[in-house]
Length: 274
View (cartoon, rainbow, N blue to C red):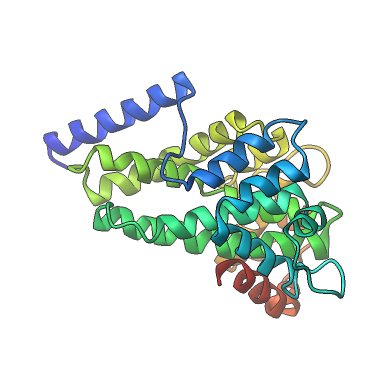
C-alpha cells in the first residue's frame, strides 16, 4: 500500500474513531420513516398508535409489514391481517424494528451514489443480514428458549457497523477497495455495538454484535443472543466441531441438525427479502 493510500486510510479511521468518541453514529441514508420508528422505539412511552402513525407516512414500509405479518413463517393467527394497527399489535415492536431495518437496507441498495467497492460491500451486507437473521430465527426457535423475534432482530442488526462505514466512505472517495475492506473487518463490530447503545437497545443485543466474530470463546452465563449469532455464522461456514466452537455446543446444534430446518430457513429469508 502506498504512503498516500495509507494516509487516506488512517485519516478515515481517525474520523470513525472521533465519531465513536462523540457518539455521532447516525445512519442518515436510512429512510426518514425508519429513523422516526427507531427514535420512537427508544421511548418506553411509545404506543402502538404512535408506530402506526409513522408507518402510515411511508406506504411502502406499511405494505411490507402487512405482507410479512401474513406470511407463513410470521403469521400469529389463521386469519389474514389487513389492518395496520392489528399487524403492529400482533407482530410486536421487535418485529416492527426488524422489518423497518430490512426495508432500509433494501432501499440503500438502490442508491447509485456509492463507489463500486462500496456497492459491493452493501450487497454483501444485505445478503449476510438476510442469511444470518433467518438462521438466528430458526436456531432460537428450534434449539433455545430465547425469543425468535429478538434473534431475528440481532441477525439483521449485526451488519449496522458495516453499513455505517460504507455510508461514511462516501466522504473518502479516494479510499482503496482493499483499505475499505480492511477497515470494515477491523471496526464494524465496535461501531455496530455503539450504534445499538445509542439506540437504547438492551445490553444482550449490544454484546452479541460486539462479540459476533469471537467464534472460539465460551460466553458466560445462560445461552444468549451472542451464542445464537455466533452459531448462525458458524453454520453458514459449515463448521461443526462442538469442542472447538462452544456456541454450537451451548445452543445444542449437533452435526447435521440444521439439515432438518433448511426449508424453514429459506422461508424466513424469502419473507424478509421479497
